[in-house]
Length: 324
Image (cartoon, rainbow, N blue to C red; front, top):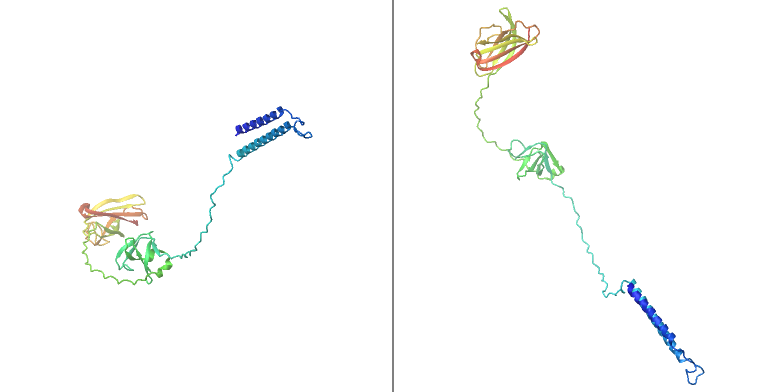
């Protein structure tokens, strides 16, 4: 655009100079020669000068107009805007249709129940009815009915079984809705099937007996402690091993002597006379406590065996006493 402006400027100057030079070089006219009978009118050359002057002014004006148009085009970004024939859009009114929004109402949820410990579920409200399932602790179960007389909920298990659940460990949701549930009647108590009494075969226990201190007395001048035993086994005891000691003094008085048939029928009897002791019978045993300190804790340890000389099945027990 700068190049066009320079060309126009040069063209304008060139034309202006050409016109001026042409006007200056033409010969001037004589007023007397201009007309045949006039009183000194304008010369013919004066008329020609006016014509050239007007032409120069016209060219200058056109050059100036061309320059202004060029500047206007440059300022407007290359041309005048072209008017658009596209008609403006016609606004249309969209009707708004009013709709009625329904009012939502809260539907109370059905009650559910959970238990704090695993609970049996039966066909009725007591242990007289058979168990058909169980409610697990921490799980939630829908309550489908509620017996208002017994306060038992009838729940639905995951396998679809409906049963009466013991209410003692129950926690409900929406408990107020329980009374709006069906209130079923208590089913008839089932008649238990007749069962035969099994024959119990007793299992024989191992060797056992009771042991207690009965009394103290002297035999042949020596002090003895007398204990009472009761045979709890189903076979007789034939022998006994006895040990006495002073516990406080850590003194062993009799170091475990074994006797055959040492059982005395009476607490005042003295050994060695005696016999065996049959099942479920009682008898007495006596052993020396000579050498123990009076007032100390004494102990007698008794081992009973089912055969002589400490053979067969044996059982050992002890009992403490105060040395007299």
